[in-house]
Length: 238
Image 1 (cartoon, helix red, strand yellow):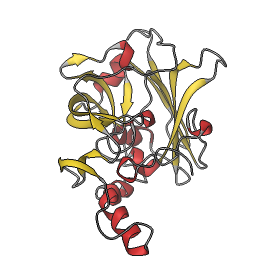
Image 2 (cartoon, helix red, strand yellow):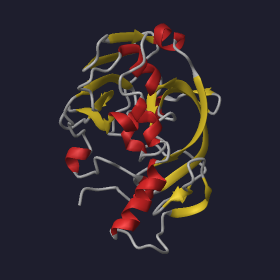
Image 3 (cartoon, rainbow, N blue to C red):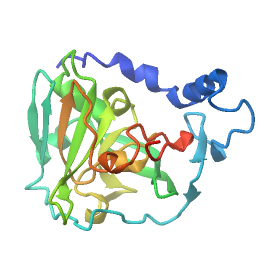
């Protein structure tokens, strides 16, 4: 199948965070010295491994909406739709038949903790984009999980610019540290967004919609940032 039309956006994002900070400093929006971007050694993207306002944890805390759906691999489906030329619904076997990627990355929760050096296995988001071929109108994605708010019944959703979703370390993962992804962490499949706060990675993911116009997700409509850049301490809407 053909390359997605927005593939070139991926390369423009590889050094985004460091470049964005430099731009903000040059414009005067950030001071030119002693900006607390974080701490610890640099990650592979040249940024401090622990972003500003975060602290490292060794465990993996569980945070959710109070409902952990039980979705078996036989029942799990991933619908990819919207501004695409070839919409598709994948079952478990079709998902595992796609090219699989092993990667190591960090996990930054907006509630101020970071778990470092996680080993993942899954499918790159860009592989899914290649599969369905986004149209020229596609600029954003809206992801939906199997979980919902117990009070309102509203499904969990989160929004991303398409170029951020195409970062090469954005994966739909089924394995963590050599083990199947546990239900409490979004198994059988969740999305991870290592260069953004972790709420941008939908747990128990079931649907990806490519969109021409942005639509804020569940937490974004409740005051969380649409952009969610950890090294800019970008947690909430101003």
